[in-house]
Structures are given as C-alpha cells and as structure tokens.
Image (cartoon, rainbow, N blue to C red; front, side, top):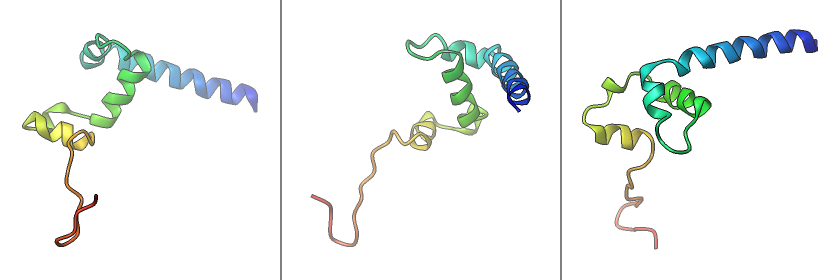
Length: 77
C-alpha cells in the first residue's frame, strides 16, 4: 500500500512541476512568499485570468473586497 501511495505522490509531484513551468506560475513566484506550490494552487483556483474583467472581479472572487452585511434597516455593530 505504501508503494502505491508513493507512486501516486510521485505523479502529483510531476503535475506540480509541470504547472510551475507555466509563465503565469513563474510570474506568481516572483512575489515574496509564493513558491512552486503556492503558485500552482493559485493558478488552479483562478483558472484563466482573462475571465475576470475588470481586475476588481478577481479581487471580489478572492474575497478581498469588503461588502456590507445587513438585513433590512439593521446593520451589524
């Protein structure tokens, strides 16, 4: 069972290395704190960046845009 899991992990490592060679992943890795795995994760989450226009949509998708939370005429304190 351990050998089978090792083979599976080796396959995943190869996939991550392949994604890390993508030009977008290379650009992401220039940001301090983002390495190979972080870049691969962000690319898999975002997908094609061109689907976000204007850039504000990407920020909203990532949950970085504050939004009011209220119900009727009541607002949280």
